[in-house]
Length: 419
Image (cartoon, rainbow, N blue to C red; front, top):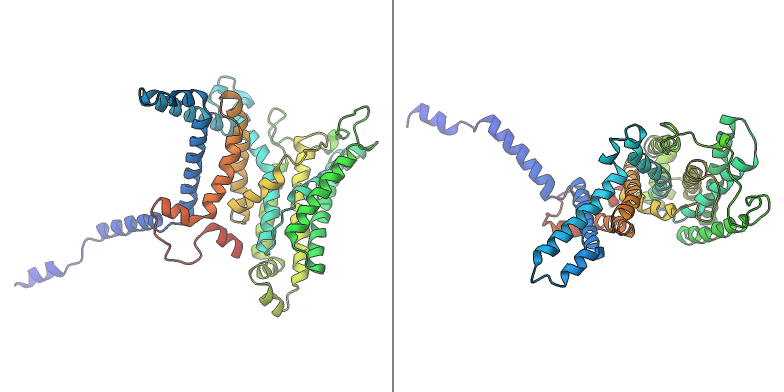
């Protein structure tokens, strides 16, 4: 064998094909080994499939065609496809973009995305309140009550006090933050001083807040004058959150506050000494106590912060979306915020994205119900199903035959919980 032949045999393969193979293998591994992003995308797809099944079941034409499926299966498949396409198309039109609004021009084109951002604002703030508590090992179920108290405080300042424009809004916001912080801090104080479980205390405080609101809406001076309905006096315009893009679009300055709050929470948890202490207590309270950290003080601190964020969500409702307090001022946001925090892996960035997604669901479900025969409750089912799939990554891996991850800690919820 000649030297030339030996050299040709031992020569390594071309660099470019090898590089291409490496990149291809990496992309394949991202899928096969259940990367958290891939798992989330697949979970979202599965939730949409479940929603599609429910849309088909709810569609009258499809149910009728099921009666003669074997004689004309095409009718059933056609009706089912039409119902699914119409339902999800209406959801998209109500949440992102409606092609029919192009002819109208102006603000009508941005109206769907404006409604999404409007609905997302209190969800982000409430979700951040839940996420902060998660990172310290606490489960704050009391966002509803903290929102209500924050709305009561902010609403009272907004309709009972007369102040100059900017000052009135700032004072009302501070009052709402104070109200939410006090309500959340009460649960934190009970946890720190007596060891009372925060799940029990926050749930009970939700009922107390609801009862207090119901009582106040019937009190003279708080209730709207000359009305026998459970509604408060209307807030002054000087205390209203300004619209971001003009009066024709409903999204208001609360969205900016929510994004600033997300950045602040990120800085608190990742860049501050207080945040390090909170995360250490959440990871292992016994080790944190041994290291000299005040575990009980951390419980009180984080519940004050969590309640303050929920109070801001209440401010967004009474100073931005509504003009008066009613019995449903929280609009179910308090419990949806828990789902948003779970979906966002208890991280500020994830919570913002989850809040936007749920805001889109809320905005789109209205159009889905009005433009099609699909009930809006379908969306209310898709949301928890989505969280269920994300909370069970092993289920997604089983459905799509993904391999178990070769690295520990895969799974967004675990990652968010442990920090």
